[in-house]
Image 1 (cartoon, rainbow, N blue to C red):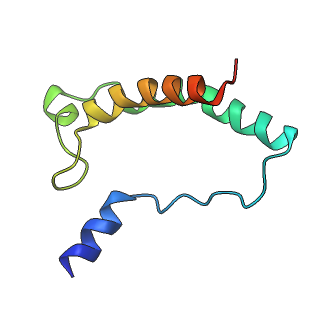
Image 2: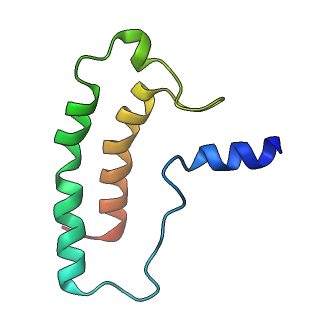
Length: 86
């Protein structure tokens, strides 16, 4: 039971649903537009949080809110560079 619980907590909003086919230009453009909104959404989500709240893990043995927020831009830049997208 504990293993199942930890697996579920690894995906707090569910496992990602990846497309089976390559994305068409319109879908790709929509996803890029959605990603471009993330910085403002993250800023709004953490504005007003106390240092204690920022240092709280989102799951047992998981990263803190602060760590997740710092990881996302690095991951996005790395993924963008690796994809060859300008």
